[in-house]
Image (tube, rainbow, N blue to C red; front, side):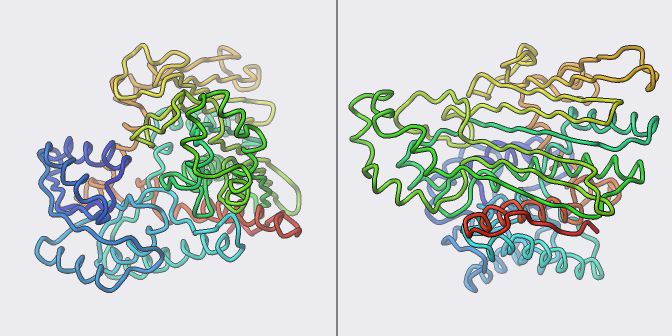
Length: 483
């Protein structure tokens, strides 16, 4: 089985390459081809020099939206000499659509990072915000046409669907739905990852940056739009109580707003006289430059309606500007893990008067390379607690409160304490992908096929559209039919 990875940045190096290395013997899988930007050639060759994997390399110039003819020709030549079975697309999301369209034309299985796509200036221009959903529809249509000729998988890596904690949450929700026929009635989610970028870094740092007119929603934010809908619609199916309409309202905080929270004098007090010497822009120029950047934080309310009545509210708060362990003037080399980023994640799911499920996951360290069973406690790398409150008089439970911890979940799922649970969940995505290619997994057991992402992508598109409409002084509530 031959696989290509397109894009071997920090995420692919931490997740996909080690996963393929570990799964080589189990699946007979070979990393056949690596595609990366020409500017990263020395870095990529050095990375693979110390590993057993020996792929071919193809280095290209950056592009967005449309694949240049010469890149398509070079990719075609590479796979004629070593034909592929599947491709993992782990590039900047602006390049997701052209690489996915190429892979569909080659009749390949696809595993692609979230989000499905994003658009330059999605937080600034309505046609770009709306275009996110247009991209999805185009890919879905192309994938559907291919299925008439060959059965392939197009999977989106949203690892929380594979995380044993959220699998447990879904099981608990379905238990109460079976006993009471009650759907999810409200949900509040918050994700904060402490990405502290100093003002001039917001201007020139592109990795998980803001300078192309999008930000947090297109970074990790898509996970939580997907998670909310995945849980909601699963319970709605079980109860037969399905909304027919959604309304979305969002409020963004931009990098320009950050300058009102901490100005140049505040940064100089924190970092000393060296700070001004590292900042190429004065405060006035910074305010002008950052005004039209992507979102630093995003706060969203989603109303679900049935026959005109509001039946559920989903509140999703997404923050880069949050508790961080960064304390250095200059950024670290690894902007994906390290550089002070820590995760604080919380969910509270109400199921009417019958059940409240709370998920708490709070890290205190930015170094995640080594973990142990001690990291199950609050502040640990693998902290993940589920609090289950139930109306036991009506649900028949023995206790009104149960607490499920990560150690319990590991014992049930086969996950280990030595690595981040989120990274083991991402490896489970790769396992599913390889199982499908080998014919070991039927389509109905795939957890995150492209077809399952219509509503999450529409929500992401609407979150951006709501913000743009506010900028234009128009009605910021974006509605769409759920069908």
